[in-house]
Image 1: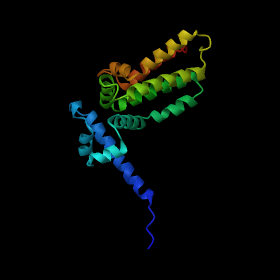
Image 2: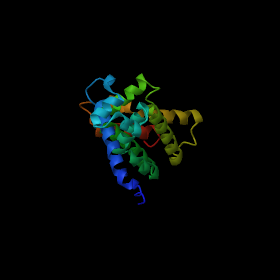
Image 3: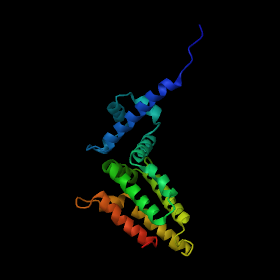
Image 4: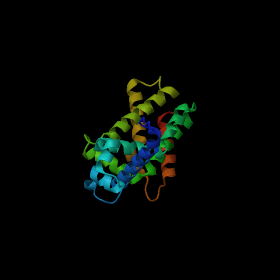
Length: 204
């Protein structure tokens, strides 16, 4: 009797479900009320109801697990809208969409994102995800401004870099976290930041 052919398609949905369970367990631990010293691959395995080697199978290291969690949060937080931002030809609408996309993301799971970024400060060598994504965000803003071309060619190189730096800071989690208070909603923050972004870019 010939051996039965292995059907990977049968395992794929199960593997993806396990991966998602691990990510949600990580999210619960990192974004929970406990001490972050409790965060470990073993703790994630217990919370997800799998053995530790299963966690390592999907995420070979703690850094990769946090990177995966960051990607998971970005997907759930609507970061796919960035494609629409770059497809928008109108400068005002593009900048408004840019700000709204990041504010929506930052507000989607504020506590977990805050703690991930804190780990990136305390242990930058083991949690590079926030720093890498900040670099990506800066590059995305730079590319968007060059695509829109609003007064960019008339600015000196230093002025262009300063504008990119300002807009990168404006759309950062730290800026959102400082402005979003009990008396200022995420929508209000987006409105405020959009107004400033348009003024900086010369659309006022």
